[in-house]
Amino acid sequence: MNQVTVVICNYNYARFLGAAIDSALAQDYPHVRVLVIDDGSTDGSRRVIESYGSRIAAVFKSNGGQGSAYNCAISLLESGYAVMLDADDVLYPTAVSRAVEVMDRGYAKAQFRLDVMDGAGRHTGTHVPHSDPPETCGDLLAQGWLYPSPPASGHVYQVSALKRIFPVPDTKFNRYGADFYAIYGVALQGRVASIPCSLGGYRIHQNSASDASFANSEDYGEVSQAFDERWSMLRQIAAKRIGVVLPSTCHDFAIEKARFCSCVYHAPLASRWHWLLKESGNYLHTVIANPFWGLRKKMGTLVLSSLCLLPFPSVSDFAVRYIVNPASRRRRAA
Image (cartoon, rainbow, N blue to C red; front, top):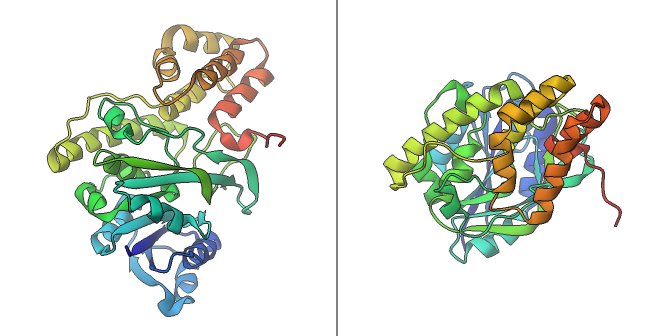
């Protein structure tokens, strides 16, 4: 039976860390090891970690960012599979066992949905992602199409595949978002299994349903440049370490909706129309040509996007929030 390491990379999340560790220790799979990498925290994280004693393994390192923490963790892995759990997220008790059952059929990675929670851990009534990619999404990725993926905590990886991608360079753009290399680098190496149910919780605590943002680490002013840098680095890693040649540009609705938001949210009507006429090409392409979406989702996104062109700021801003931030979507009636 394969051993699984749940890695928790932490930096100053003492207020959430205990819940993450507890959820890892509560897995019903019998062969789980919990490893916490503390990236130079200055809050009460050390006290939280040490309170678990020998039930977990821990490494306390100087602060270097998420990329540095991932590099450290993956270099230490000896198990067959690994979960890279963010310190502010949680796993449900059956997450590892459900994923291992699938992984044992020869997948490079299994991914599952995460329920979106607020800072207090209350469910918002939505989950991410809303689309499941095909098993062969790595083939489309090799053509430049980034597939729908949950955040970092929603994956179980083959450790051997992770070790072919990491370590990654220690740059300012890898202080956050190091999961990008794990998510997409592993998908280039084999089939990806999607488990169509929620097996964990993703905590959003630096914004709310009234915001047009959906990230805890980066603002939209930095997203575009960071994304371009990470794609360029992934291209170099893929070519050198696994022999896969990626195109120079890629298509990803997540990054295009960030650019869309930065152009039209709280913007005057003239600016919103300027976006449509001059800057909307890539955004529309990632909607219309998206190989992972069905016709209904494409049409719904286009209709919502068109609301941003109406001369009513409240309607436009609502549409942007609905598209960009899943936390703003109300629970549908059963």
